[in-house]
Length: 84
Image (cartoon, rainbow, N blue to C red; front, side, top):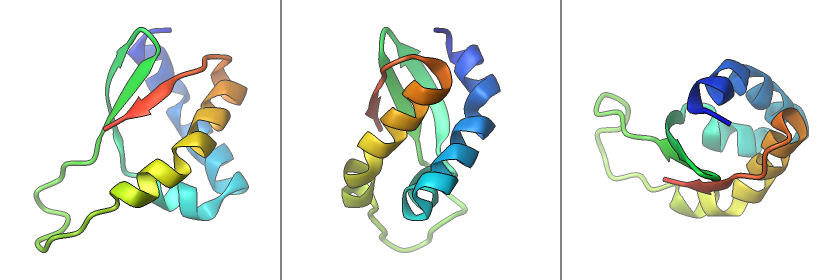
């Protein structure tokens, strides 16, 4: 799978994620698809305008990454590892 293919399906992934687990959706809805190498999807959460203080959602990302992986598998048929 190419990154462009996943990007074209990303809204469908997000809709399915929201239907399955709204907190997981809140964790990943603003992630940018940064890279797809082999079976590793790298997400980018950097946005200098978003949070001026120190906020860390790393624990939530790790907790909900398996849910995102399962939704991606269901939509695309691809088993991807998630990183950021």
